[in-house]
Amino acid sequence: MHDLLDDYAHSNALRDTSPRLKLLLGLGAILLCVASAAPLAPLFIAVTMSLITVRLAKIPGRFYSSLLLIPFSFSLLSAAVVAFMHGGGDPLFAFSIFGISLGIREDGANLALLLIARTFGGMCSLFFIALTTPMIEIFSVLKFLGLPDFLVELSMLMYRYIFVFVDQAAMIHNAQVMRLGDAGVKNSLNSFAMLCSVLFLRSWEQGERLIVAMDARCYDGKLDLMEQAGKAEPRAIFAIIGYMVAVAAIAVLTRDIQLL
View 1 (cartoon, rainbow, N blue to C red):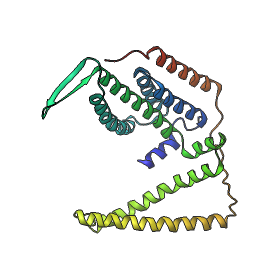
View 2 (cartoon, rainbow, N blue to C red):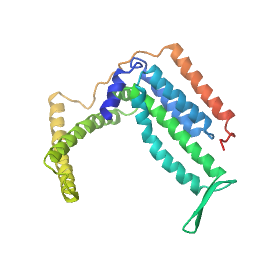
View 3 (tube, helix red, strand yellow):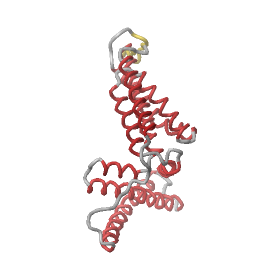
View 4 (cartoon, rainbow, N blue to C red):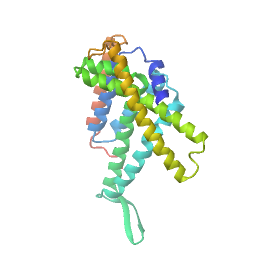
């Protein structure tokens, strides 16, 4: 999954768009989702950000739909708990199990719908950033915003070696499976323990090799990082500002509207 996300981030139709604008659009939409008091604005954000990702960025709809299944699973469970635990208003649904009465009231149902809408709106905005903006450009924007150099460079190294260690873990796991290391619970636990120990040793060795390689290249504590995308066009800036204003207006005008 991480390889596909990174591949789409480098090959999507919005690849040459300014990363600052894409981050402004995505992060602004996330903040508006969190600040919205009614579900209509987050739902509008979810629909529009999905259309931008699929239509403008040319991300395959089937792959994008599979990504949305991830927030759908945990948001549905969380919303169910909120709906049953939060009381108030007229009862909408009730039943009894083992002598315990359970039910959903209007306030709990509306809060659950708001939770689902916020989750989908925020995740669609986050997927927009992840599928259209490579991490190296995100790091360049963070450096432009004034974050400390050591923090940006440390984040870059951590991001790079996450995938290295994931590949190492996958290779070790495949070797264990070929040798029937997953046959039975006991063998699976022993294989997992061996995988963790070997991965720890290899990560330690990789860190030492990285230090030697950086010293050999006269590393002075700073990594050069340049933004690769072009500058923001005025019409794109006005379009994003207009979108944010429209979403904010929807959030304000519909703050008292409940779906149930």
